[in-house]
Image (cartoon, rainbow, N blue to C red; front, side, top):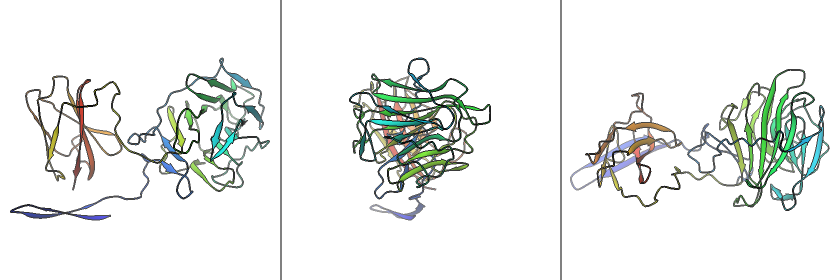
Length: 346
């Protein structure tokens, strides 16, 4: 979108032209389902500018949970723990069905589909949560386990080093269903898929769909990856949640929320250089970092404890000019921090 910024004062007037990208989902953005308005969103761990992005935290089930006796192309239904209700796309369930082929379903099913399809699709199981839907064979390896972790308020299903059919290539991945004490605006449960390995993922489906098979999210289908999905890699985490995107930079909760710093940035917007003026000199341990609007650090500024001025030349840590957009300065130490926003125009 082409924009014009008019700047005027007592003795001057200027016009600046710049462009802002609107509506394009990037790899660092969440993915909505196809309902209007969206019901579920998929956030992965690289969506760090969004407060709902997950952080990879593996929960091991092997040896402490219950092993599911599943052969090739088999599905079993398990009862959820007492008091654990799984609300998915507005419907309550007290069971889930687990398939050897890398997926679960909210509720009961006897479907055993090993051939994966895109999502949403009537050819795919209704209410599917496809973690790594492919032709898998758990007859070798540690198998498939589930475990209820009351301290973390979640139920975990893990495919532990389950190989693809006819190969020796295993994958280790899991799905976590949080109970309703983990609040969402709609009351639907939070679902997180986690990937400890990434040995293939060239013929898999990853995503979700509802009971009608008409609403869903497709993160991956064979080699087609949604532009909002980061490549599947060890340590990847994808959260499915009914919470609209909200942005922010998270601070350490132990940090005092009321900052002693006040920062004035000028000119703001700026073209080549911006000056940050502080109301007091920073402590010797203070750090100053510039973040882009995805939450990615782009520059560390030199902090002089005897100066109340910081200058940023619009370049990253490699000395390259960054593109136009919104940037954030975060200044402070472990006890006191402040954030201010600037707009760079090229």
